[in-house]
Length: 214
Image (cartoon, rainbow, N blue to C red):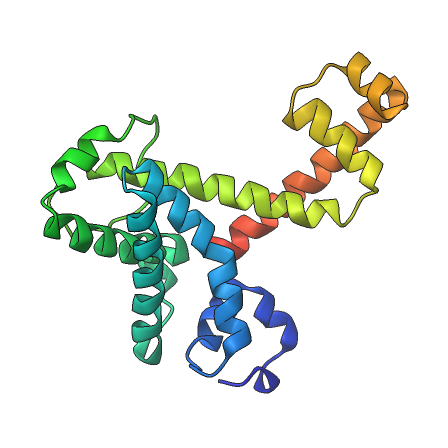
């Protein structure tokens, strides 16, 4: 599908990117997809117990799976949305790889317990502890969205305002230290905290609608 046949604004959404991937020659679309999600998949695999090499292989195999599914792909939000669909592909590749090495039960048992509940309905392997990996995926996904939102917000505010927010809110540096290091005022710290925080919440909300359509 060529981009020229659609409203260009639609291509900012995840659904539209997936439609672009139906065109195997759309190198820009495929690069955008890879750049957007490889770190998320890689980090998830590492925290699930895979080695760096195994995590890299799962990333590559997941991308191949996406490419194979694209010609017949139909985006159906009633089946759980993009987040659940991508988790299904990643877990299938993890299960395939770990079953070959007879390590699946050991890896799952090493996953640290998380509080929360599963948001997906994937049932492509029988392991009873799989919900822990669902929650791990949800945690990694939230981190991915926050980092992406921060990147967008950084472009909307001054460098100094972002540095203030990063130091005081993200790194939890005391106000007095921020004021001294950045040669600013206490009021400026409060203003930056409010403004950047508000933009971050708005951007995060927008990304959740884009990445996790209901």
